Length: 233
Image 1: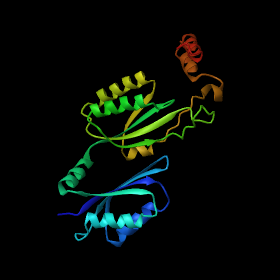
Image 2 (image 1 turned 30 degrees about the vertical axis):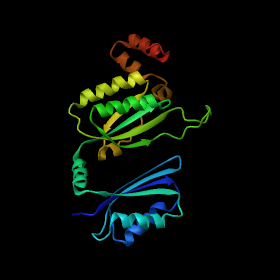
Image 3 (image 1 turned 180 degrees about the vertical axis):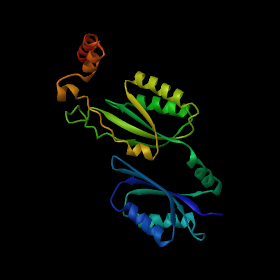
Image 4 (image 1 turned 90 degrees about the vertical axis):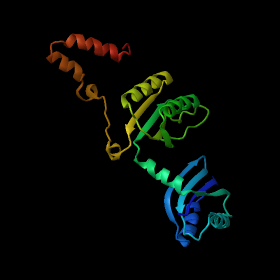
């Protein structure tokens, strides 16, 4: 029987917390099986899944953690993880992973509620939520960001990916927001494409108009381009 524990630490974020915890674990030859940390408004939420030597109990670990973290303002909890729960957790790692990005001028609770509701309806699990945009000042400060973006890391099967994407597209239109979905794999991190619509800036002409002239429909396409530039289309 294994000796696995989940360590949960929360409270005011300060330098040295993770170092103090892992220093204690190192002295007792503990292996770290998983680790995750988030800080929201200077409040820390840290979790570690640790495999301990057979003679080291979760109660002993909790007591030692309380001692070394006494100088910090933290709540510490150590939970025993059964072999059944641990093996079930390991078995989940083969499921497909996707990244969903929600972009809007300002993120509202209603938008998040409806997006996460659709995620739950598809029986997908949210592993992580991350804010990608900058911090927003209050009171309509001119220096505030004019857009906000949060990213959801999803895990689960997509039996009908095209249908799911269509439903999220409809939801994005209803929320007056943009929703982007992509597979979470090594290729996603290598994509770095920036596109600029600068043809008239660089060559003083609209490329689509020039192509239309070659096709013999220059005037018709030019009228459409001009209407679009005026915001009529």
